[in-house]
Image: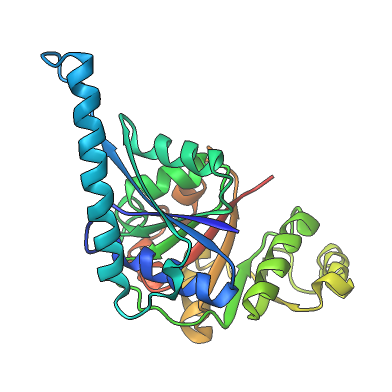
Length: 277
């Protein structure tokens, strides 16, 4: 398993580095690629030969800075650095460079820190929002103020669509992390609706015995984010898993319509977002 850990050398980005290192230690065998995309264009007054020489020298310098920054972020937790890589990429588009490098390197996840404010663009960050809506590689969004802990409890928020495909991924990850895993579903027609009950039968399959389902009735007085905020505040999962339809404005639909967008559950808990098939 490979994880692309992005950083812009800011204090906020240290949370993603620390989370990825802890994740790697817990899952045993995950390879970390610490990556920074630097926006750069060739000045018109520079000839190509001089520009290439500058790029080589600057890449070497920044790679050393990246290694030093990562080590300072991890402190005593150096185990995750075994076999890791450091990569500096010069580009004109940071988000696209991250997506392309993750795909080219066959990474299973992209890990990026969020800057932890209230509304969506600040909550997720413009880079994270773009990655969520365009990357074929799942994105781990780590709040900048997150304090690293072992992942012992996972909440997978499900719409009960594409259940087998999604549960395969959730169950596999939960098994690797040896974490208690639940599928949380808000039933529009109620928990006892025949179609809802029918869909829960998938959890009886041996492959999903480690995933417990939890069906709650939808209270239309509250938005989805308000219901999730209340639930997560009580249950305290260590990781939230979502599947999103890309380029459909999922996060805008999820967070922006409600005043609860300004609440802070997503500023405290890492979220893993898979592209929905």
